[in-house]
Image 1 (spheres, rainbow, N blue to C red):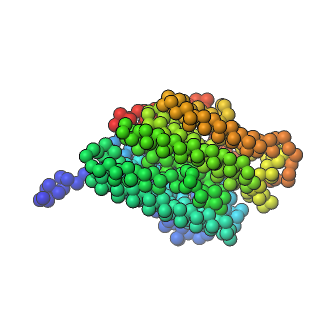
Image 2: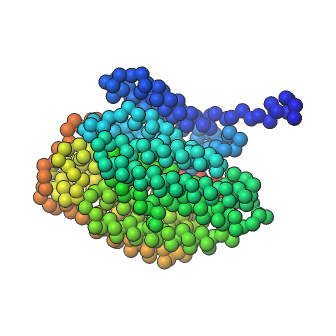
Image 3: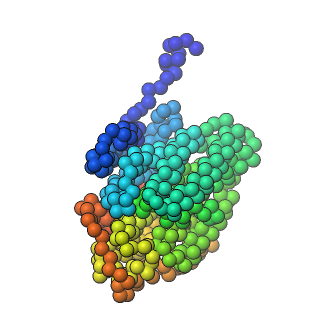
Length: 488
């Protein structure tokens, strides 16, 4: 090949497709540089402000990329409606994390300037993970997100629980990436390709390699999303991590880790549909039942919400078992709205933790409406949303999954879903009863509440209702995203 042919073979990347990620990447490097050179007082002002500006610019650039669709970087990065929708919610929640983080870390005596650039790099990984079919890019972005979460989980100074949770997450997280990597190797042996679209539409190889590769790949992601029996790291990591970080992991993390599985759904051929339905359906049933039954006996609010998160992984997996376009629409909707209501619930806990006498015990919610009425009301909305009470996004999400299951005649899984939702009533309603029907356990006060915190909490609370009353806000991107994926 001469020089002319070599130059002709080089493709100029379409950077307009990568603009939000490029903005976050530049923000991350700026934060890294400034953290090294600024004094401590300046870090507390400059780093969160620059992070917010960078994320807002990235959010604005998402509006630019929605006009452009296709692949870039030699097919390793894909910009489509699904990626755009996911990035909007990831960036919005990242902004709310910033609103709650600074005062939280100050109250815990654990302010680290490194938090801001690690958060930015982690966010970058989640955004890339949402926009790729390429196994190498998925691996790299998965590592970027995971390493960020390991560090962020351990950021509470002097907390053994924080370090223990981070260590457990590190061990099982490393195992998950190893299994996903082995799965990628077997899929490459089968097809000779590292693109999931080509792998799952290829015919002619030994199907045993494909099946083994898919199983290992999906187990790797099952560990990340906390599906039973791969969930053991999750309650300890959620309890030990700084609560704004827990909110980020439970919302943006779960959203990002599910997307590669969502992208596989339309590519499942008829010959694998029954095996996929049974395997994913059984895991979903066990996950939702286990998460809800164990949540009933929890005394720590963060562990209760952690097991609730496991149960919701089961609800989402129930939709994943339906390899039809209606199942894909239900899963995408449930994922993005769960990110909103789970983040909001952990942010309420983050504010309560700033009271030096607060210990995260469930009994401390008794009479919260007398001490902190606005926090009690916000938490009430999130609990009803997680339970699935109308008019909240949780009700619409579970209804869509139930419709998808009935469309595919998966009545047994729909029954398990109804049963597990009934079980969850026990602990969600218990919290509501404690807040509104019991006397005060203790006087709770949150010092130095910022306007950013209150505005973020109000925004998430409104979104929990508005996205249910007017689901077309999400549906305009969600519906074409699912239909285009299946058309491919």
